[in-house]
Length: 168
Image 1 (cartoon, rainbow, N blue to C red):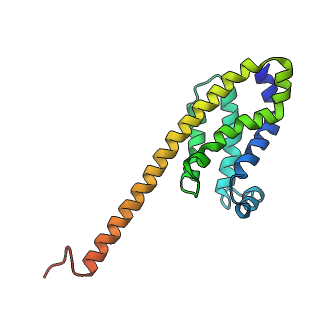
Image 2: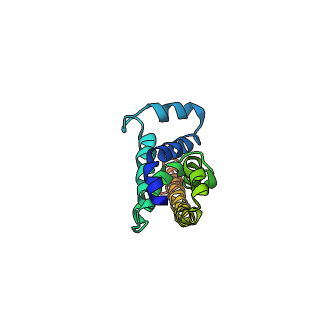
Image 3: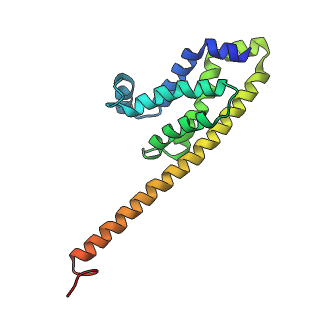
């Protein structure tokens, strides 16, 4: 029952979820992210939009969540280099629960199939935990890149100022 209802309402749920994700960006960015459809001009908006539908499909399937995790990781990597706190960066995963509740919550309560929703909620929660791991990994890489750049600049400055590495 739940899977059929979710499949029937997929486009409405995914649109609701994408609006929530994009709504986490500043208002000046939001207009661009929602209006520009060119993948090259707007890679962030296009990645979020295309991955959201694919993540939803993967969560409805009975398959391993590895594909969904990799799709979430693509979004998390983008958000890890932006001005988001860790909780803001991964909140989009949990926003899917709210998007689902907005669209089919009433139908679920009336039909008494809330138990089926618990399994989906569990899968979303696990995806959120995976998103946090991905976020931490991406932030660690950003930190390492910054540290390497700082070391390189310091070494260059020392060489230019007659410090290290010059022959007398």
